[in-house]
Image (tube, rainbow, N blue to C red):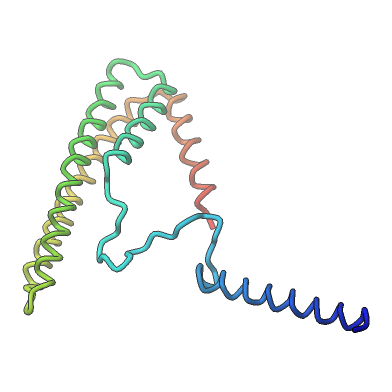
Length: 171
């Protein structure tokens, strides 16, 4: 076999391997997938998003809040308002984990029946949404009260942090 034919055959084999590798990546991650971000968590056939408010996530959120609060050098009045927000979040996260598990079990139990009571499930979900809405409203009021207690420099630090995060999530 001549050298020229060997180059064509070798190039064809390499091209075929690249084609199969590309097909495998598209099959695994989808046409617009991002393999650099790791696993893409979706519902996984469970019906509920698997990323609830676990204790690790709660600890991380509270740690991060404490870290940012320390940077603000809060006064004693500001610390009291901050602790009220933090205590409210702690209780919500603690209750949220058990509520989520209970709702999931209730949903799965009802849907496994021959004739599920969808109306009851819908009403319980509406109730849960109203509870969350009340929680958010209460925390927004606490947050505004805390923000208004900050001085100009502290407000600037918070606003700069928010703007930085907004840049990351734009587009």
